[in-house]
Image: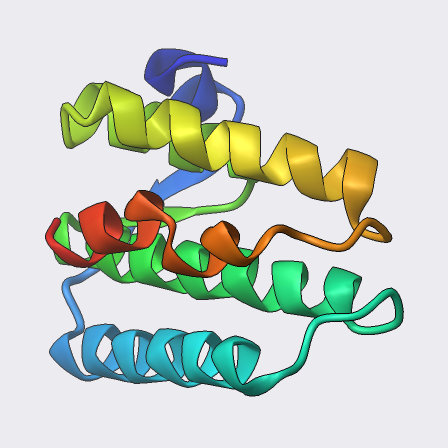
Length: 126
């Protein structure tokens, strides 16, 4: 789905820029990330850790959308926003790939390198 379709189908709406909400989302994203970092990964916790990392990224992206005056209601439109509005195609593709991996492999034990993924560094620098 592209940005135009997201708007036409009502998955995006215009909102006023709310600096307190942006700040809150960034703090919440950091807390989720920090929590995921603290959890030892095993077969029981792997899915939870990956989900916390995804939620952390989504909150960072939500903060960015509010900064730009938007509220987005689905994953595909976050990807379109990153690719077409922010002009970060590789980040949009990586976020989409990350979600697909979650759907397929949440019960699999993630590799330790997932904790230091460049997607987080890139997202934080938006």
